[in-house]
Length: 249
Ligand SMILES: Cc1cc2nc3c(=O)[nH]c(=O)nc-3n(C[C@H](O)[C@H](O)[C@H](O)COP(=O)(O)OP(=O)(O)OC[C@H]3O[C@@H](n4cnc5c(N)ncnc54)[C@H](O)[C@@H]3O)c2cc1C
Image (cartoon, rainbow, N blue to C red; front, top):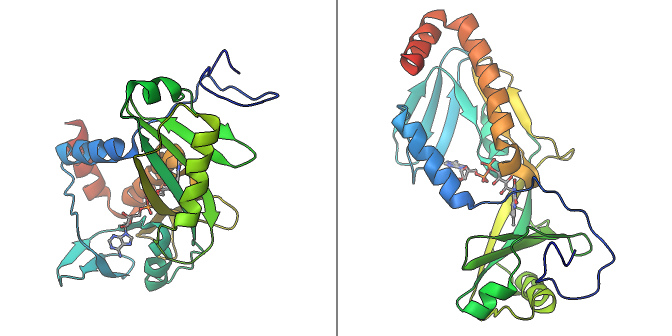
C-alpha cells in the first residue's frame, strides 16, 4: 500500500487497488456536457424552477414558477429527490428518498500540503470515506449517510469527522482552509436507478441513482435514449426521421 500511495500514514494490513479507477471534477464535467449539448442544438434553461408537469400521453407541458410554459412531445424526469413529487403529478409512484452526504474540499495552499496529500483515490472501509485529488491544489473527502428529509443544512458535527480523518491519515496536510458541502443522494430502497417509461407512453424517468449518479450516468443515459428512441419510432416516425437527419446530417 505504501508503495502505491506513500503519503498514507498509520497502520494498515492490506487493501484492494483498482488500476482502472478514476476521478474527476463533477462541476467541470456537467458544465462541459451542457455546452456540448448546446452545440448540438439543445436549449438549456438554467435558474428555472418547474412548478408543474403534465402529460396527455401524446403531448407534455412543463410550467415554470415564472409562469412560462414549455410544450413538448415527451418529457424525461431527472430531478433528483424531487423526482418523487414530479412523478406523482404524472401519475407515477417513485419512492426516491433523500440520503444526505457531506464532503470537504481541502485547499492545498502550500507545497508541503500538496506533497503530503494522496494522489490515488482512497476508500476507507471502516469510516466509509472516499477521497479524490482534484489537481495540484485541491483534495476532496466525502462520506456520511444522513436520513433527514429534504434538508440541505451543513452540520458542523458531520464536517468535523471528515477534517479529523484528514488530520489523522495525512498529518502533513494543513486543514486550515476547508470548503464544506452537503448534497442529497436520490436513493431508491433497492439502490437501483429508475430508467425507462412511466405510466404514460411519452413520460420517461432517469433518476434514483443514489450514491453513484456520475458513475452510472453514461450507461443510464444510453439506456434512456434507447427507450425514447423506441417510443419515437413507434409514435412519431416523421419526427424521428427529421431528428436523425439533423444529428447525422
Ligand atoms: C457527498 C456525496 C458524494 C458523492 N460522490 C459520488 C461519487 O464519487 N460518484 C458518483 O457517481 N456519485 C456520487 N454521489 C452521488 C451523486 O451526487 C448523485 O447520484 C447524483 O448527483 C444524482 O444526479 P441527478 O442528476 O439524478 O440528481 P441531482 O444531482 O440531485 O440533480 C437534480 C437536479 O434537478 C433539479 N430540480 C429538482 N426539482 C426541480 C424543479 N422542480 N425545477 C427545476 N429543477 C429541479 C435540482 O435543482 C438539481 O439540479 C455523491 C453524492 C454525495 C452527496
